Image: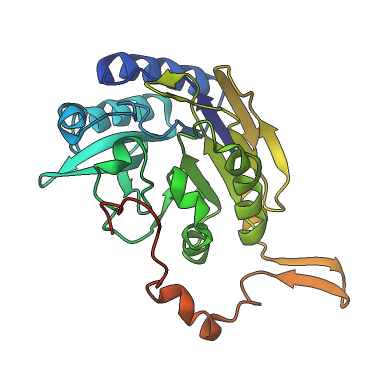
Amino acid sequence: MKLAGVQCDVALGQPDKNLERIEEFINQTATEGADLTVFPECALTGYCFESEAEALPHAQTIPGPFTDRLATMCERHQTHVVCGLLEIHQGKLFNTAVLVGPQNQVHPYRKIHLPFLGVDRFTTPGDRPFAVHSAGKANVGMNICYDGSFPESARCLTLLGADVVAMPTNWPQGAQCAAQNIASCRAMENGVYFIVVNRIGTEGDFSFIGQSQICDPGGKTIYRASENREEVFFADIDPNRARQKHVVRVPQKHEIHRLADRRPALYQPLTQTHTLTPPGRPHPHN
């Protein structure tokens, strides 16, 4: 199976312009044999809106015109796409990624963990459980950006059977440590392929740092993109490798199974609300 990532610039509040570019990139990646192409977070709409009122006119319904266009592209090329956008549903604004396939499959994922940053200051926390979907030869789950800072996000997808975790992101300056470590750590911890696709360019006061990457189930980085250039990149993967959770390094002496070796009965603190009070301004989602 061939994965593709599209590290690109995005025009804030110009979904028509961004959609044209998304379609051009899909034509390119599909022509080169990609089975799944991943775009950045909010690739359709941009991210650094200054108010809910500014963002709402660019939000999409799902299904809707944007997912219809993607479905047409996927059917034409017999491929799958993950792309970020803003979604409007029952009057609520969500930061969403959608997995679209060639048989009109449309699977949205709403960002669960929201930082106090950009449009996430005004979006609603994701209200649907983690889910994994078939995308050709692989089972794919989605995280979005800040979700990657919570190991439980990728672990839930792994327990649901994900071979690949696709994470559209908008990492700005200040997120260098995340760019250096999150993908390889989440891949290694869960024995999955992990593809992170960041953007480049500038919106308002924020510049974005690229470094999109694909990591294998051992945590090895297969490809890392540049910090400041648009790039379309590819990796051939074997989903069966992600399904072999029992790693034997030295038979009977060094064997690891990161799922079978878990101790869920002792993880109760993970499901309890924390008692630490964050400093500074209260977060609107608390």
